[in-house]
Image (cartoon, rainbow, N blue to C red; front, side, top):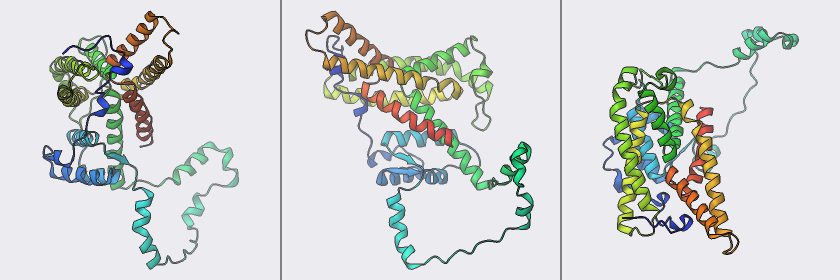
Length: 342
């Protein structure tokens, strides 16, 4: 089915990707992991999951990339938020009764211990940087084994969420595949571009063996994704064909994310794409606004056509509508902050 090339792109997005319906509870049958299915059902009931719930689901012995990927895909498909802790109203509702029934006894002031008195720096410690550093380090409590495991899980989950949010954009995926292709062809150094990880079963030999198949498959999937996106933004696409294109588009994007993450491009190579996406989003918003506000005789037909073409080209490059890219950029700011704070 051909797209309507003459239709202004600010009006042509009749089936934008962000309107793809999320799977309901009945769509959990493909989740073969019973624990994951129960976790997602709980998330759908409340609309969110906490990091404590995620940590309880993930195994302690090692970071399992497959379990994390399956979890993140399920969260994305169903629009389930991942929050730091329970919302205040939930906590207050569950603790009000207990607070009334059990008055809290007054806390007695603790006497300073002898070892604390010994490690307390004297008043002139500010003049000695080494003593200041040692005094500060002495005040930082060591993590228990359980806390270390929980922190490791949190770091890995926030890292993968941040990366997936960037790579989910068509432009970022295309740029990443080109970078990986240059590594495969020897035009970029492997060790400085690719991250190896024994715990994630990502050795140099394994990644190099995957590259030919993954890259060729990614090329095919990117072509399929672009074709489906053109159907989604065309006013000539009937509703039934649009629904099929939506399903293919989402499924293809998930496959591409899995394949590209198997090649383990370093995060420092992925993160700069965030700024580029922000610039493209701003430009798309500006073009869309100008086209809407432009009076019929204010610009020549050629000017309007040029602006429409630029907006359409940006949409095809990112495989996003102006709204969906704006939402993605906004979520990236939040995910980046969570990743850096983990």
